[in-house]
Length: 176
Image (cartoon, rainbow, N blue to C red):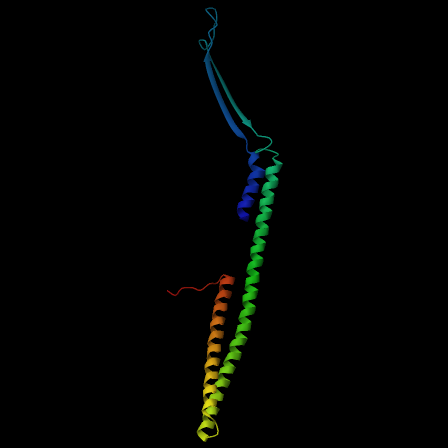
């Protein structure tokens, strides 16, 4: 858009400097009577070549058109800056979210390991006759919940990493 606006501006500034070339040829036959002696036998031919410039709208000193193209160029530059700011914002947000999700995955992994250890201990207690079946069931439920949270955290992390790649313009390349 900026390149097109710059080209339009150059056209408004320098286009009117190119002249219009005109050529004209006219001929006719004038017969003044029996006493008229003309070297061409009574016919006339006129030739003209000229250069002209237009002044005003569409030509030289068309201030309105020049200002209009300057405004379009300025608007294109502002639009470009807005787009760059939006891309920067998306990249920063995605990067921050990825960092947060890395921490969530780490905590979910710790919770999963802790739930697995709790299940192991509750089974040992049950074997020794100290623990109850209810403790074992609750430990199994906690391990399932911790594994589900871990999988959800990893999935969110993968999605956000893809979003970060897209925001930076890297994208995912297809394998050959």
